[in-house]
Length: 234
Picture 1: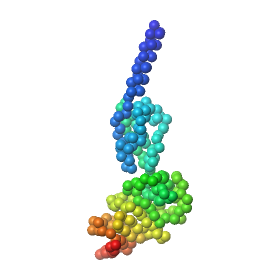
Picture 2: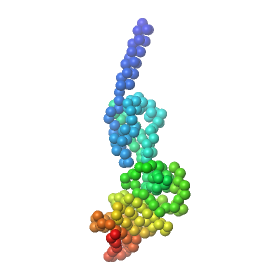
Picture 3: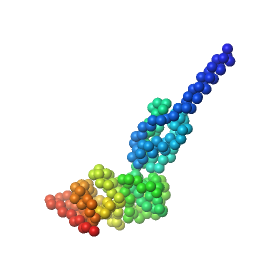
Picture 4: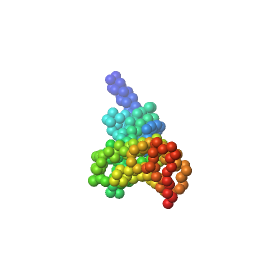
């Protein structure tokens, strides 16, 4: 009798194991992604059939095991059914990058280098004109004046708020900024009145779209009644 009960239990467990082994996560919902498409995240999280097994997903989640993905701080994978999962992506906070030894060194709002890559991220401007020594991944950019990081953060946030995409932000030795937008250069000058300068830029851009030249907004004066700015074609 005991042998029959044991055999029956073993058969049930074997069938359950076969069923579990055959299950695959086929439907994946991705949220929080900006630098990667949902399809790219799914391929990186579930690169093969084994990784798509729900038991493997559960065990990896319990162990806190994660795949390393460039520009991604972490991912939370949750099973919503035996064949579906939800992936929440927490991307690294990046405000700009500098070129260093043929690589793009991406840094966050505090100046910490969070990623080194040959990849160029859309929407992340190159920062030029900074003087720095040797760059080490996961350490702060060794610049001469660390107040530049707050200036870059304020500028990039205002650019994003106004929906103004730029290719590059150039700083001179006085920490005055120039925007590079295709064939257009925009002189911003110091960090003073940056909100007003970018608001003016947003209004002017449609008028100079498709042109090549330099727009001077460094003379912006919030108290002026009739504001005039020079645009020198090149």
